[in-house]
Image (tube, rainbow, N blue to C red; front, side, top):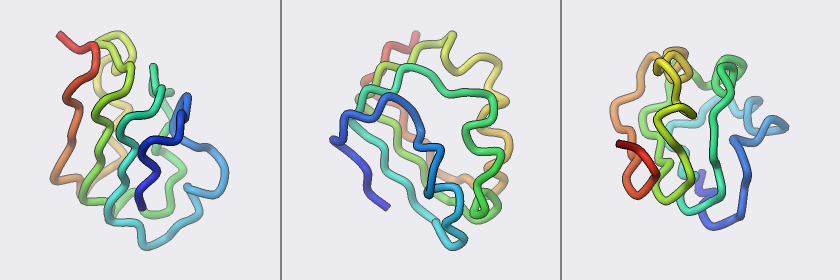
Length: 87
C-alpha cells in the first residue's frame, strides 16, 4: 500500500490497522515526526508485514525512542528511514 506524498502527520490510526494481508507499506515523504509506542501494535497484518518505508519524513532519534515501536512487526525484513533527522 503506497501512502507516500500525502502530508500525513503520523501513521494512520483508522482503517489501515484492519488490513489483514498488508505486506508492504510505503509512507515516504510525508510529515511524520513521531511514532507512538502503539503505532503498529493493533495492525492485523503486523505478523506478515515485510517492508516498511518511512523515508523523507521528520523522524528524529527521540521519535523512535528505544526502538520498541517496531517490535510488533515480527516479519519485517526491510526498513527505510533515510532522509529523516536521525543521527
